[in-house]
Image 1 (tube, one colour):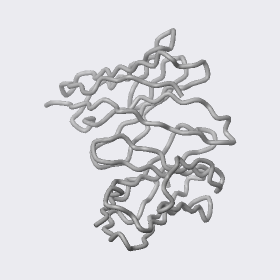
Image 2 (cartoon, helix red, strand yellow):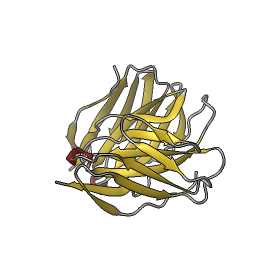
Image 3 (tube, one colour):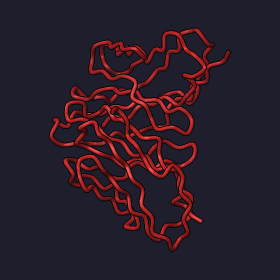
Length: 113
Length: 114
């Protein structure tokens, strides 16, 4: 298995909803990442998990709450989002021996209404 | 990590080589050059990386100048499926037990024409 799987592929949520994005990999990677990408912009790093511990938070608002239950799974919990949070959310992972070589998922297209 | 400068867009004819330049004049000795690409509506895809020697894999070649201040990604025989945004990223090595950041710049939009 050489993929990062993200679910759902598309999500529409209201500003008062709570939802979660899921990311899974079975490549033995020990770092996992969340990126946010707005239209026609490059991906922006949100969070880095290293060995299941949060190591980098790029000053992301608390309405985004990451969770890494085990080395294969990464979640992003969403609560009270704003329409400007609508974006493509990308998950990635990397192996300890090849730390700059990320494998990305196809993303979750989130629309906040 | 050092900043990179890339042209905003480039065109290439199908079947010809695509040469994508990147300037990274402030690169330091332990920083690697990475190339990724992102095809529309997909996640970024790793292409190749290097430190100071030229590198080649099944997707592309990476030529790094001797002073390491610039590099060129070469797609030897571009196809329509190579149309994408290409990102040149400079990143330090964190040591394998901690993980740093991969920071994307604006990239180059490569359009391959029939």
